[in-house]
Image 1 (cartoon, rainbow, N blue to C red):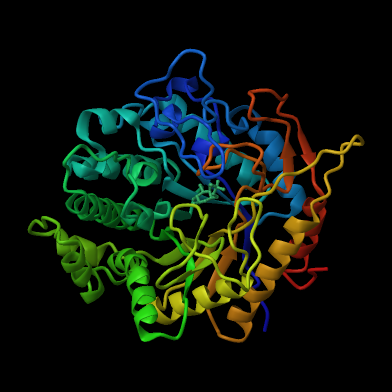
Image 2: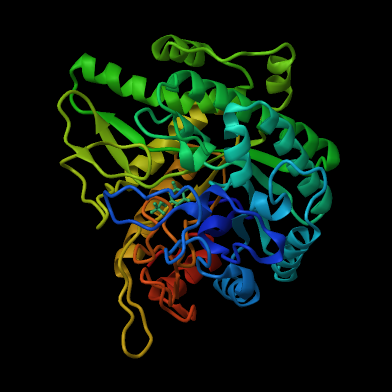
Length: 471
Ligand code: BGP
């Protein structure tokens, strides 16, 4: 009983939200570097280029670039077994389409991985976390263009070769199913802003197809370079309930889940199942599939399924819409929300684990979970965040039920934003997730100093007891 002995406790981040140093060491611009900060419910403005006098939160973010040693020492103090981060693709290939990588960028991650390994912390690395090189967007139309498959393959190959023996756990695309959120530009995920008159559905299924091929190629190469590599996909999982027991609501709910399974099936089963082909009918669009593509997808099946879980929502007729990161849904009268309106539902995490394991039968990895909240720094430098502890405790309890009672094979748990960083959906700093507070603010002020919150000490106990001591 209990969690595995080698359970991967840790925390999660992404380069575009944490690293900063946006032009240092030869880094090129990524899609995140032209996005302004916003507020809850207000979409982030995407500028055509970097404008003078405008604040772009990703540029310095919370400065992992210069402070990685200090931060990793803090993660070690908490007892992290692993640390999830992403490599900024444009730090390795500044434009994205070069034939040779940027040595200074590669060296930076060597230093980071060496520092993690010094403490016995396993790096868990996402190759693409909302940070496609901007040149690929401007000159190729991003993932619309099949040439990106080769650019990504080259990038992945360089990373697998360079970090062989240092990094074993990889993920290809963060929250890849966020590409198929109808009614919104899949900018974060796929670097796509729809053009006037564009067949949006066609673009989505085609771009997704290219990403599946890129992921499959990465998995195949990654295994060849080092058979020890474990390479996963990463999905955004919002648990969904039908609003009522009206069968029509159940059908609506089921349909909404199909876009999650679309991405899960392509990655884990390695083919376009009936779930996918029926989506094509619904969307009125099919991808152009070339000879050899399906074979590639079959050979490039992932080793594990990683996912983010923050909230649940309801689906049905006449729902009242509530906030969420990318996929939204309806208000559930049984649930409370965070200050950003995300519905808090720990039981939904257990249900998601059960559903995903039932369907896919591969190890699962919770690589994001947590609540964004406003923290108050007290005069004595302390930060009391019982709301965060409560949220995480309740989710860990349900996570353990999935493992202990439902026999789900779970590899690890890395709460999101283990150190304060920039929010993806709003670009804010005031929406904090961390166990570690960073003195950085939305008005571009702050000295970036780090302070431990109460949750820091709590999480340390949780890890030390392998999830037994949640008090
Ligand atoms: C996920 C993203 C993360 C992260 C998280 C929290 O969708 O993978 O990058 O940011 O959501 O969302 P937010 O930062 O908008 O609060």
